Image (cartoon, rainbow, N blue to C red; front, side, top):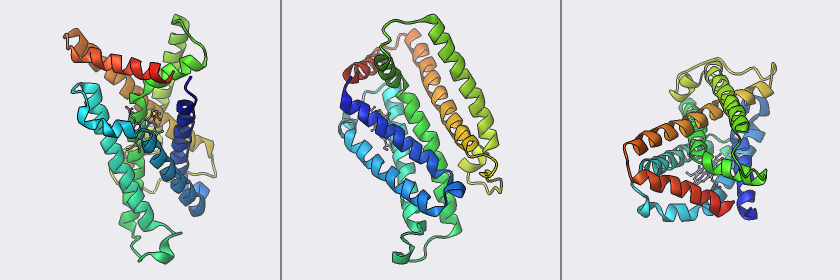
Length: 245
Ligand code: HEM
């Protein structure tokens, strides 16, 4: 197992954790929220420095569904993260003594809108890398052969996460948050802190599952139609697992 790649995955997990922490503004307070957000942006810069070869390879992107979808998702993620970064600076309390008073209500709404979209797009980003992450987990646990019972248990867990995620979307009012609707139903952190994070993680899980199985379904359909480009897509995923495993 490539140690550097494994450390990168730990940093990715930390970045995802900081993103989730950022949603708990009313639990953490402003100072911790701004500190966690700054650390997340620094880790995201490092993440993209590590992945600089991917950016350099964009002109050679294969014209097959998975690669093109991956390209679109990464650019959507970049736009949402940049919107989050710009609004963070404009409404920051820590930076307010040095900046003109730009931070109005609309900017705060755009900040929160960008944050929820980042959550959704990061989950799609992870769903696209799920085969690679499963490969890494297999290597770590020394799993060499397929096992029907293990697969059944994992699929049952995925179904449970998906159902919980659908319920969490309703509980947290995700539709309204992604369409910038005004709501007063903030999470009550005095009632439960863990519950909030479980709901956020379940939403991310649901989106990852939809991305992974959705893409698998599309690829199978195209494969049945005999699309030669899909063979290359599956080989690319397998190569990436081998490369790092
Ligand atoms: C919480 C935020 C994020 C998480 C958890 C995350 C996670 C991951 C993981 C696990 C990988 C594969 C392993 C690796 O290369 O480290 C990856 C690859 C990548 N990520 Fe992210 N990522 C995040 C945000 C971003 C952002 C904001 C961008 C830029 C817009 C980005 C761009 C990329 C690129 C270009 C790759 C390589 C793609 C490939 O090789 O197919 N990621 N990400």
